[in-house]
Image (tube, rainbow, N blue to C red; front, side, top):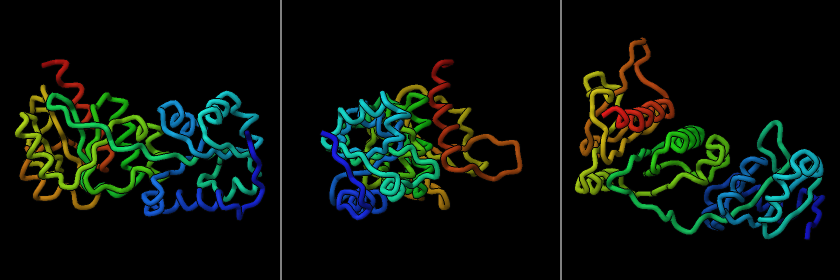
Length: 264
């Protein structure tokens, strides 16, 4: 049954808004917030539990099929006014549909010794995290290992990922170096990306078999402890720029990881 909410001070609206703003509140409630027809639809299609859905009348008119799937997957559905939607919206051109979702129970994934993985160490920009996840899924990377990164359920990360953070296998670890040592013991090749021109060119290294490549923090790069467990690799560049944005560096490293074995 669809109910109606017209007050901006409604408790469900205030709770949803707090989920969008606070990582601590998300972790306490084990819930997260999504905005937009595409993201909400992808969540429903990916088996994510939608606890509450909020939508405007204009959204129902513009996205009838997507909204029907979203509502049918939700525990509760609420039609809201434009005024209420403006309180929930974090985008300039809101589509008028929002969802409160339950976080998946556990990551349910492990590192396969013959797989291809990207390990992100201390990535703090949600947009970078989301963009890397989107590229990783598009290229067919087996999963992302996250060590000390920003919250994957940050709305900016979810928007940048365009649903990929809901589908790509995510493995959370406390210590990148320890995780990589176990990968080495399992016969995997461990790489750490660096702008140092004295490092090996990634295009000169055989990337067949299991590989896990590390992209470090936007400002500080890969930590020394993690670098010590890896072969240092760099992306060949002919221009004057000394380094690349973290998401761009990750994209090029992953492209080479997935492209090269085809010709080896």
